[in-house]
Length: 218
Length: 218
DNA sequence: ATTAACAAAACGATCGTTCGGTTTTTGTCG
DNA sequence: CGACAAAAACCGAACGATCGTTTTGTTAAT
Image (cartoon, rainbow over all chains, first blue to last red; front, side, top):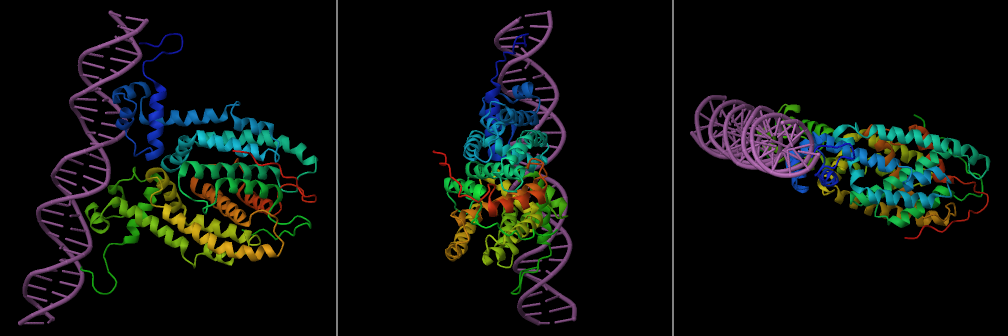
């Protein structure tokens, strides 16, 4: 069945191949997963996989690209929270969006760590650079008006958003992807609620302006 | 050379083998690293490696155990900060201790992620359970007295310490181990200083008691 | 007839591990 | 001390399995 002018209607289910590969890569790593394992899992011949994908790394790259596109889609809940940019009032929404994102991309997120270890981050680097640009673009402008309201303390709001985003993302990643209790036995909801509360008001009583010790020198 | 009554005096440099293995595992993953690569890197024969270690996984296990013991050593800077428990005044010291810990254990920390991916966290789980116990033990008692001073807001101090510790650890891990800009292009010192400031005082002006929106339902 | 889709065998390389054999060290007896 | 078995250290070939990929061929759609 040759590819026609309309959308290619190939016999093989590409999605099924990618699903199988994702499941195997994310639980064994890239190098430890074989093409024969992938072929067996999606009930295809090894030869046919090479016919459609060309190489093992291409399959892996397709998985990374898919995750990337899903996350950068303007329709994605996480992007909507970013665009709305109601920090710090939207912290609960941010938490929920990140929780769902991690939940729905468990395996893909593990690919990120696999890439860092086995490829030196080669496949994911452009993704995070794009994210950083978009981030500064959205919040950079937004915060100039936010600062004028006088609601924020003198903490750098850009740092604050980064702190919140990364902490939540990492917390849910450990919680949902790693399966290892790396949070000192803390309960998830308690930890997230506590984190948000601290983020807004700090751990010290706010009546008197806090003295700020000199930050450590380098 | 049979092992005498005194400490075994083996010819082979165990440290050299482990160093080579750590370097390879941490840059390629476990499954993608071969015994022949390790043997070549430490200039030993494959047979001799099996004579002294028995299997590839044993070498890996020894590396995990070594990291564990280094971190749990009461003389380790990080443990000293934990025992002193001057939260939140010691946040700068905590940051420095964690930065140094990550710096000096770059490769071993990558082993943790390798374990999560390729072994489902089998080798590292007991370690984090021990950490959690010790953590609650130290800070549980400490915070009962700290709360009586009235300096802390009503945020759960145990959550606060966990938040701080994990955030710093993860931040420096990404910074020093991953080599990928995952922090939205934020500068390291700026981010850490900002984080500590936020942790103490929050991002909102503290004059009036903040209204606390209902946390999201599940 | 042409070409994509698919399957299976084959290729050279490499995997973790074992094994046979040699070298080196050690403990013991004369 | 020297001789000598026992044991550990060490090496490299070999084993069976499996790796990513290619090749060869057949089937099915256009």
